[in-house]
Structures are given as structure tokens and as C-alpha cells.
Amino acid sequence: MASALELRHVSAGYGETVVLEDISLTLAPGEHVSMIGRNGVGKTTLLATVMGHTTLHAGEVTLGGASLNRVPVFRRALRGLGFVPQEREIFPSLSVRENLEVGARPGPWTQKRVFELFPNLAIRLSNMGHQLSGGEQQMLAIGRALLFNPRLLVMDEPTEGLAPVIVQQIGRTIERLKQDGFTILLVEQNFRFAATVADRHYIVEHGKVVDMVPNAALEASMDKLHDYLGV
Image (cartoon, rainbow, N blue to C red; front, side):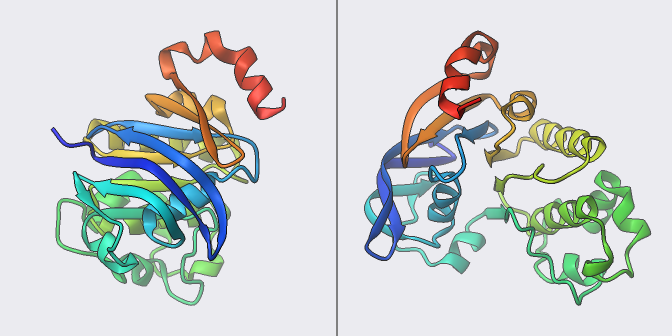
């Protein structure tokens, strides 16, 4: 069976500037994998490379065994990549309903299912994006990505700046998506949160993957993780 997502010896960056060097990683279908590392080591650039927003200098990115190297951003989305950006990037002047409708495609994920996942959105349906709390904006960003009916979800720091109760809700959401067979690539600064939702963790330093820790070995690797993360 082909990997859901694979990066093979990828070097990428912005223009002539190389940020990622010789990155290799794989996600199996239905697997949840996190990228862990200090700020500024290239984690977000890695996600941007998967989505097609960077300059690819070497290597190959594949989705379901098919190369994405020459596939433009919008066609990557059509091939099944869903993206939840760190800044959420909801439309502030559109209502919750309009934000959900703007990218919706036919498939198993409908507004009804999104409202079952996030009841707050159903209550706030007519509110504008800028009237939502940070947690509600994150729910909306996830709901919007799900309504695109992707086969792989890319999430950048989904818990950043959120209250603990919302972090717990996001965790339950990711766990439910796992039960539904979703494949997720996650960047998360909070590795204790990542431990609750991911099967494996790639450690990134200076634009390179320097280690991979299975979730079952995370507790035993805490000293090493502390060294990597500088905590």
C-alpha cells in the first residue's frame, strides 16, 4: 500500500534561501504524525512545502504515491490536502455559515457533521468571523477544512493561544478524526499535547529531521526531548 504522504530527501525554502535540508518522512494511511521542535527550526516551512507554498530545491513530495512536485497549490487541495493554518485565516467579514460554505465540496463531511463536532459553530452561525473567540475561530478553521473533504489534514499549531478547555476539545476532535480514518500531519510546540494525539513524532532541528520517536517511547525519551526543545 502506498504511503498517504511521503517526503524523500526534500530540500526547500523561499526563493534561493534553503530552509529545509534532506528531509525524509512518511505517513501511513490513517496515521497521525507530529513535527516537534523549537521555534524557527523549519516546522511550518515543512508544512508549507507539502502544500506547495515554497521553492522545492531537491527531492520529492508524494501524496498516495503520486508526485506533487509539479502540482500547483490549488490542485494539491483538489487531490485531497486539507490545511488548517497557524493563523487560522478565516474570513473576518463573512459569517460562520459563509466561511463553511466557501470551500465545501461533496463528500462524507457535511455541515451537520461539523456542528456535531463543534456545537458552538451552530449557535454562532450568523456571526461574522471577527466576532468569534480564538477557540471558535480555530473550530471554524478545522470545520472549513473538513468540509473540503480531504483525505489528509495538515495542521499547524492547532492549540496555540487557546484556553486549556479548548485545547482538550481540539484533542478530542483529532482523536475522533483518527477513529474516522483521517491521516494527519501536525506541527505542535506542546509535545505533551502531541503525545495525546500522535502515533509518532519527528524531531526537527535547523531544517533537518534529527530523530523519530514512537509515541509509546515518548515518556522514556523525555530527557532527550528536553535537550532538543531547550526546556
